[in-house]
Figure 1 (spheres, rainbow, N blue to C red):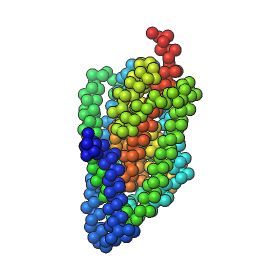
Figure 2: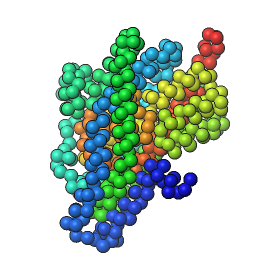
Figure 3: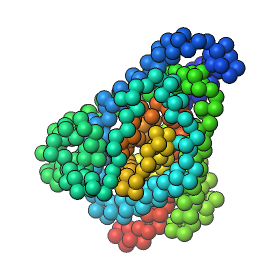
Figure 4: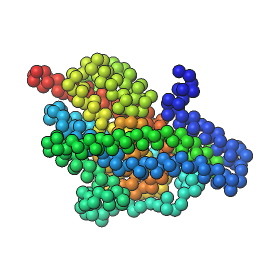
Length: 429
């Protein structure tokens, strides 16, 4: 394979190249080391460069509701109709909720302690894209007075109204109710609706994958505008943000090591070395779904997991266990909240945690899907989703790392439940 074909095949490499070229062009056009062209010509050039990013955000807005809704309903049905759910489901689901909650709490602590969003000036975003006050509008946050109405309206009277008003938490709950209700009725009755939702999921996923092809151009335009207008120092905040996310993901890997040692009773170095193949594939593809065949093979052949455990835990985990993604999303929300000088109340943080947990159920295991869920959380807590533009330049790199953490979490769960259920399963043979 030639280097040119390798570049076209790997989106992450295209994003990295776009980032480097964008930095170079921005420095040339800017005042720091370059020609320092006048503001009028610079504004004219960057107005065209921002078009790909604007298209990307519009595509995200267009598919966010149908993709999240259909994914949650399909996921709940695929799990709820499985016979194994009766024996392993409750325990595995509880385990995944616990590990995801740990990831979210780690993210809250790191984002609050390091505060990466306080380093970057918000004008870096506003000036680069000539954003209006409407684009940067900050909605009111949550308060104790809002709790009665929030609880009363968590089940939407009109889902369309919930979408138009940005009530994403209500839409998530609505999808869960529909999904659980469909599992309670005869399969032949729910099949037509399920087939329709699966088609909607596939269509919106196709649009998502298409929109990801725009990301390198969006990153190039964003970086050129920021560096040329604000200077290279404007990128420091993004660097600290990346370090915060990577540090959090490293802590989650340490948590898995502790679980392997204390709960699964397995040797850490020997077990972790067998994770290498799925970790490498997940890092390169940034897709838990694409890695699943390798993950299953590793669990059964290398780790000697009972196939009745692995064939339930791995698909289940690929669908709902998104520790790395949840951690990244929470840090990103705090980063943007700090950037926009939004004080997150304890109630708003609680809403972020709940929304992250619910949304992780319906996050498709494909590259870029985390952006969809991040948009959901931002809308829920009142942060302008336009801030996602700022994260596009580094998202692909972080996506690769957090996907590797997600897959590691699935394999760790396999080891845990192989240990817990082995005697019970043998007795029932």
